[in-house]
Image (cartoon, helix red, strand yellow):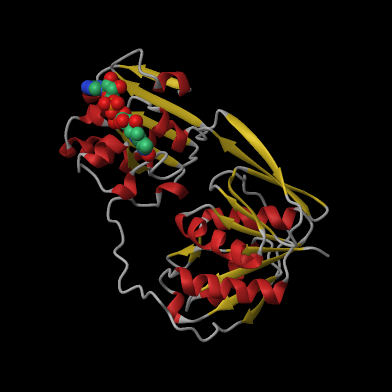
Length: 321
Ligand SMILES: Cc1cc2nc3c(=O)[nH]c(=O)nc-3n(C[C@H](O)[C@H](O)[C@H](O)COP(=O)(O)OP(=O)(O)OC[C@H]3O[C@@H](n4cnc5c(N)ncnc54)[C@H](O)[C@@H]3O)c2cc1C
């Protein structure tokens, strides 16, 4: 039987939603599904992997893998791939995924499709769909002349449902001895976002229309009520109002939440490249001709300084917060 190896990522000891999506997609395909997890607490993810369709979990419990280091991660992934011989490797198109897996593909001489929004299999032959030109068209890619198909999927693309669950067996692997050329000394985590933008179900993004950094409070007030994550345009990031970890777009993060609220943001093509996969887009802008309205499902033409406090107040009432 063909085997799909899913590289899983976690946050606060729980699988990220994007990893659950991948496990379930692999399990639903009827192929043998195994999870690969790295880091000292990786074995603790086994139960959750099993609940989402993994039959086996392969772990590297080495504390050196607690922070991302491309040399160590690629070495571990190569050990796992050599042992498992998967026909497909699935991982998230996260910054980690986009850094590690092209390196793995080069080492394995394997085919790779990044930024996929759909996957399917005919037998073991995988097919991936991915957007091109900021979502203006889509490419469908299949693989040839490769024994391993590597697909990096965008988050929030696969609906969750129940899959055949069971207790996954845990197999431990060891990192090979290596002379490291780089060493990660410290990881400084961003403070702004509650949930990483790429994982968020609701995003409220602000643009230059907010006029100054302090006015982002208006977005945070609404985000607190809705349980949303706050994002931003590049113009705002370049002005130093918020950190780069909040930037959505071509040179920022690619997001696909259920609801994207764009506030005081024009909708430049480079911004749309990062968020046009959102299911519902609401735009608030005082210029009725702003390009964002061409992408928006719902538009509010108005002054954000009047609209936002009213929206926050109404949602507070409706949601009882
Ligand atoms: C190579 C390259 C890569 C780039 N990558 C990115 C990227 O990743 N992400 C990104 O976002 N941009 C990116 N950009 C920049 C992009 O081209 C735009 O400059 C940027 O997105 C504009 O940001 P903005 O919408 O906040 O500002 P603006 O374009 O200035 O828009 C501000 C909007 O606010 C509205 N507004 C003003 N006052 C109010 C008010 N009181 N109430 C309501 N609305 C109001 C205005 O009508 C206007 O539409 C990139 C550009 C290049 C060249």
